[in-house]
Amino acid sequence: MSELPPPVQIDDGIPAITEAERVVADLLPIEASERAAGDVLERVPLWFHTFALGDGTYTPGVARDHRYRLPFLPDDLTGRSVLDVGTFDGFYAFLAEARGASRVVAVDNEQYRDWVRARWGVELEGGQGFAAIAELLGSEVEYARLDAFDLAQLEEEFDLVLCFGILHRVENPLGLLRVLRDCVAPTGELLVETYGVTDPSQEMEVRAPGDVYSGDDFVYWGFGAEALSRLARHAGFDGAELLTTPIVDGHPRIAARLTTSD
Ligand SMILES: C[S@@+](CC[C@H](N)C(=O)[O-])C[C@H]1O[C@@H](n2cnc3c(N)ncnc32)[C@H](O)[C@@H]1O
Image: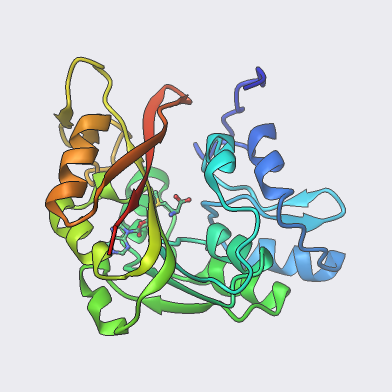
């Protein structure tokens, strides 16, 4: 991965957009008019994802560098159904739609409102960024304010389930994997991305409140590859194929593909 300049902190503590996130955002060019882009930027007080609105205008996403995810995102989702769990502003759901998915459902319990308030003092209504981008794209992605543990309410199985940035944020990660297992169609797959371990000799870590991100008390766990694989098998998957373990902005991350044989 190429070296990039560190992000610049601005006065309110919200980091400026990184060049790395522009690279990711450019995968989904939105091409909004200058007026529509300006309106969206004015309406939404904080963004998690960086979106390329057009003419060099980007939403100022606080996510630092998702380039490590690009190699394991399917290029072609033609005809496949996709569930994006914990979608926040929905970048990955909209990207799935742009890559041909026939149906995309995006859910979030909007827990982020609590940590966005705690970390940056910004009040979000919930779903604002998602709705704004959906409108610009004329998207048909279906959004539900729903807790991942209530996914059975959808009564649906998906060819591809994305669970990025959540497993370390739930009190019962094995329970979440079991719920996700029930959402994966027989020939489908689950892509999991979550917080990794800081000490590679540890299979799993229990984090102290606020020690990963100051003011954010919702990060509980760090996972090593073997821990993820064992949890996956407990949850009814065949195992976990390790995809990557990068350090991003000083934070260990891990991603794996979970499949089933039935
Ligand atoms: C760090 S953000 C990641 C956003 C996006 N998935 C990504 O990785 O780019 C985690 C998201 O998961 C959501 N979330 C956390 N726990 C959840 C749960 N139990 N059910 C649904 N969403 C949840 C949060 O509200 C937040 O939007």
